[in-house]
Length: 70
Image (cartoon, rainbow, N blue to C red):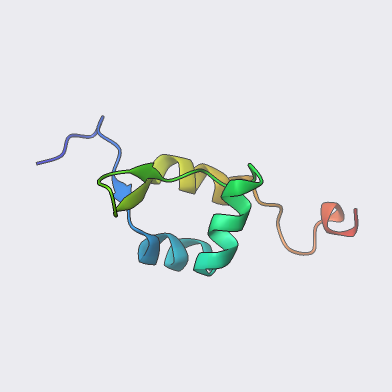
């Protein structure tokens, strides 16, 4: 059971769906500090905090904005 104060953990497939990015782009951006880093759940499983991923999405400029030309 989750509470509203507990952030949801997103697995890679869901992060790909939300962002439109592929696995390699997600991990490359995380290494460059341009995307949230995943949290280790076990030795082989990782997940991202949903609020961090959604904040990254909201930080992206709108297509066609003057920032695109920069």
